[in-house]
Image 1 (spheres, rainbow, N blue to C red):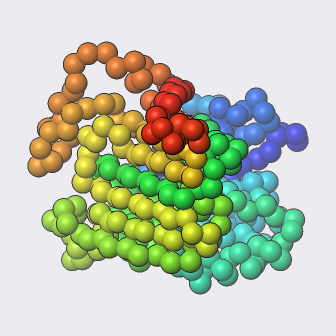
Image 2 (image 1 turned 180 degrees about the vertical axis):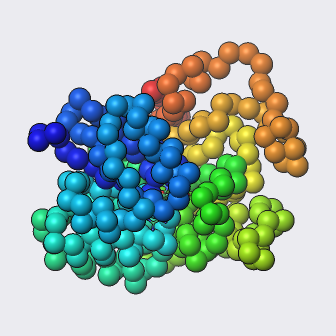
Length: 334
Ligand SMILES: NC(=O)c1ccc[n+]([C@@H]2O[C@H](COP(=O)([O-])OP(=O)(O)OC[C@H]3O[C@@H](n4cnc5c(N)ncnc54)[C@H](O)[C@@H]3O)[C@@H](O)[C@H]2O)c1
């Protein structure tokens, strides 16, 4: 194990186990998961079974502090609930052993906590700390970023992102049902999209306008007598320093939407669109029927035969074409 980069995963629920699987795919590059920390016995069991199926001996801790003191790991992945990130990160950063860290988004649930972690991390140049904003690295989005950064669209003026999807999934101890645990729907779900808007705009925001509501989801659920307080739909407009603007349209009671996510970026000479069909192209039925109401489309859909169902449309307007209002449409399929 001397040349192996040894990973420890803090929080082995849905995402923590996904990290274990992803690291297994990288095993030939000299990585292994050697330990996990999670207080929840069923999560521990599932992680143990996964590691066993990969032939990875695994040390299981019920808390991150024992894992830090064990000295077993070089790199830690923090994939515990959002409200635990700040304390765990501060413990990692202040620990005498140095551990590099990948923390699942969002960094923390409040701006004050984010600042605290960032300042503390600056004092540890021996530690690399990265927030897992994975959308940047999804191949079609990475391509989109390349196109925008390559100047093909000119100066970015408008970024529109729509996510119409199914409600929040059930999580261990239902932590994601309350704003105090997640930071709110726009933090928990949409930090990816605000991150992308900022990348496309190439500068920081100066003004935000938003309107959201709890209209449909989780209204009939109670946890220790409390009804969930997370919004399930919102419109957000973000204005950036350089005059570009972004809009987010989020709906979390639109299961079966053909395009779960759509992104368009418009510059002064071109436009690029991306839509991800995370669900296959369905015709949505009545919302009251949920997934059961969804009717499958007949016929072959070439795009969904391709891995991961990712598609990108590009519309390029050359200056002359702009004058003639004549669009040249190129289509790239990944
Ligand atoms: N990148 C993405 O797109 C994406 C998607 C989903 C979730 N996430 C993020 O991943 C993180 C985990 O979400 P999840 O969906 O796996 O939740 P989950 O509820 O499935 O798993 C969380 C796990 O953390 C454990 N846990 C709770 N407190 C802990 C603590 N103090 N120390 C160690 N473990 C602890 C729980 O017992 C549970 O097993 C969250 O920050 C979430 O926002 C990211």
